[in-house]
Amino acid sequence: MNTRYLLLPLALILIIACQPQPNQQAEEEVTTPEWQSLFNGEDLNGWIPKIRNYELNDNFENTFSVQDGAMTVGYDGYGPFNTRYGHIFYEQPYSHYHFRMQYRFFGEQAEEGEGWAYRNSGIMVHCQSPESMLKDQDFPISIEVQLLGGAEEGDRPTANLCTPGTHVHMADTLLTDHCLPSASQTYRGDQWVNVYVEVYGDSLIRHIVEGDTVLSYTLPQIGGGVVNGFDPKMKPDGELLRSGYISLQSESHPVQFRNIEILDLSDQFSGK
Image (cartoon, rainbow, N blue to C red; front, side, top):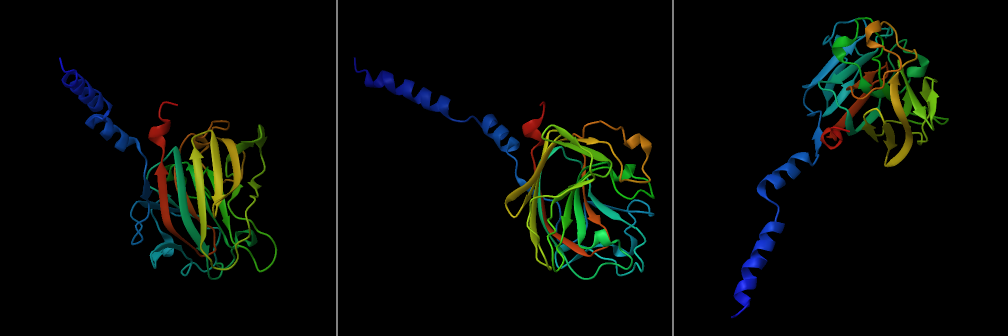
């Protein structure tokens, strides 16, 4: 008997068994995350403004607009700034993700803006929902990736950590200071700066600037002060922050944001 003809069907069976099946391929495609744009460069679709002393969705004096394909924060109609801090929220919350964008400061600070707010903005992660902020609340309870621009002289790093109504851990120590400087360089002038944030639920957050990790910490949680006018029900101190909204900040200095993207990793961490 010629054994060639017996071995051939067996070989074919083995080859077929090793091939990815249609359902398996579909599942892999679904669970492989891809970068998604959160800003279309044309309008503010998908974003929700909340400015202190104004109702949700009241974009007072066109604080947030789109200019030259960039989300732009400006104060042309303000007069004195009068502590009207603003935030613009993306419409859905996230838990585990990578977030990246470019930002740049430009122009002159609004009249009577605080000295500390010169070339100052932020990416707020793990935010409370925009609907839960009260009308006169100044900042959302959140973790802030503070964005700073340098003055003509002196060091002023960016992608620092600030904690409105929150705390974090670093090296097993609970940090209660409101702001912690990063290890970044100082970026002066009106240049675009690349910032990247890695958020892993209630375990780990990293700040990355121009490809360099400049700060990392663990166990983000509710606690502390430096937030005013909030609903007490929204501040159960000690509760870990596992998810929340992303917002971008308006603090009295004109700033632009572009190439705003997210890599949603929730499916990879579901059930963990």
